Image: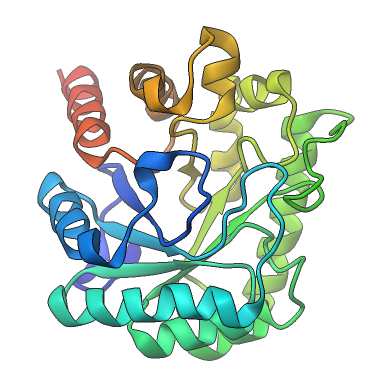
Length: 273
């Protein structure tokens, strides 16, 4: 279980996190949200069954260059304020690795922090999470977005990522942080075979005794195998969601909430029959 704006989310039933990208350059064009369509998109995601809405203001696709702190804030804070006003019971997450942005987003109405760097890119992030006592998603990333896909290497990818996340969890627990979620970081400093090795061994991450979030939605690990583009990758995404659920994923971070929720429903029908 993990806290939400409504109370707690029982992760015996896997949850869905919907992606709201307030950016002009997200890798999937269909996820780029304009202010005019923000409420409509968020409402549809909530009606389709999203437990969390994840708001980001800076693309972290491979090769992406960081924007300024002020520009990131200018993108996400009005969106979060608008969402919090219109959907007061919705659980909003801020997707950022900057503690300054996270603090402002929490003040504006966000409830979770989703950090692709697990505190590596901002040494103040862990103290902020401890201070604000908010749920925190920590992800593994090798390198930084602008260069992370240039020859990523591991001794054994699953074991290396596990070790990294274990050490980070230890640090956070010493600070008193309890609402924690881990994300292995598919596509973040991982070659194609690394991604599939981690997915095949995903149940290993249950040894960390915290919920496991999987973000594979429309990513290149699908498109490189199928010869598709992000716009055509929904079917491949749903197939990998099924594999991830079978291997213990408890939260799916997705562009397509309805289809992800259907994958969860079918998984539950299979396991409960």
